[in-house]
Image (cartoon, rainbow, N blue to C red; front, side, top):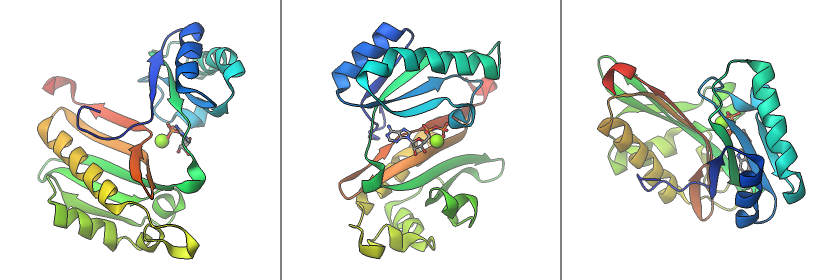
Length: 208
Ligand code: ADP
Ligand code: MG
């Protein structure tokens, strides 16, 4: 948020009442996620619940804590994130990754989410910090780029917003050498913007 990257409304809370209060401020159905440095892939352990109705927020809070504890009894649990639910049907999932190479420094990766990255390995890389023309090139050179530009009857996504988020993240990683790795997965791209829905960071304790 400090780097001007749009994120869904929400907060990390540590009790069910607070979770309920944040959910009612957001309004409608919400998403609840476990927040723990010991759980890097939250959905793998049932740590993400989407479409939680206001009346189910407290129980879901408790369920997530129980699942975290049964996955690893001594896991550090920082709380539960209550998040605004975004419309995935109207969005294209993209990912941005940053990895620090010992010789080149931070490398920035971009791709479309899901099978495009996992199965087809359709990604592109540059050395950070990246200029705007370089980022435009990245976004256009992945094989799945036509999906961003409105293939198959979809509305084109706001490519300018995606480009801006990539640049802002690349600047963030350049400014903080302690960031060894950073993943935004997914960055949801829609016709009117791009929102970072999930973030994972690995920090170098010696640089802090
Ligand atoms: P993880 O990658 O650790 O499993 P995520 O936060 O990425 O956790 O959530 C898993 C998936 O749940 C996302 O890839 C997305 O499809 C969906 N999701 C997460 N947050 C939201 C949200 N706020 N609105 C809609 N869908 C979401
Ligand atoms: Mg994720």
